[in-house]
Image (cartoon, rainbow, N blue to C red):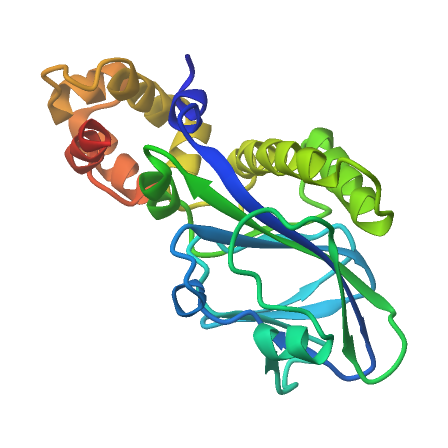
Amino acid sequence: MDVLSEILSPIRISGSVLAEIECGGVWGIDMGLGVDLGFTNGIPFHYLTEGQCWLRDRNSLTLLYPGDLVVAPAWNSHALASSPEQTCSLITEILAANGLPVWKGGTLDQPLLVKAGTTGGDVHILSGVFTLTGRRAGMLIDQLPPLLHLRAQDEGLVPQLRTALDFIRQECLVTRPGFVAVAARLMDLLFIQILRAAITQPTANIGFLAGLSDDHIGRALAAIHSNPAGPWTVAKLAAEARHSRTIFAARFKQLVGLTPMQYTNQWRIA
């Protein structure tokens, strides 16, 4: 079994929420902190289908275009807005203004339609939350970058990801019987496709995703996962990676964010 499949095999999406957000004029949505909302393993995502908007997080400001996908694995504070300087309202306040309850977990019986702004609805965003449960869920979240931005123009963006996103959006636009079952399965598939796409993207340059995309470090990760109880040392893993010990140790830390033995011990515990 490959490394990504092995990590994902015991992880399941235990709950999901999907919302079609229509924004127009002057608007700003602060997604808050997952820990404040009670979701320690919640991973929000935002897929821009029409118009343009700004993504703000603690470190950057990015203009999003149709087809761009943003994922916040640690659910750190981030916001979507009509302009860089726009004041944002918390998502809980916007839900209340739409007469909608705050989501408290589980898969909703139907998708939400949320409106924000002063006029019209020229910006459309498909938003949702993955809730991971099972062994290794915490380790996976810890290994992902704080914010993952997959751009529509990035080369190598797998077409299956775009297809899954468009399929989910169609489910949100038309309420039909079986929504809960379809949404649960689609969210599971979508999360896997996001990880597969991220491995190929130059923008995903932190964590084990970057390690999997590197031929040499990927060999070492495969060796660790195939035999976590093995008597691994940095030298032995460097041999698996076909690198010198010094180059391997530096490259592994640069890509994965942990030393080889730190990652090995973390995987053994998981």
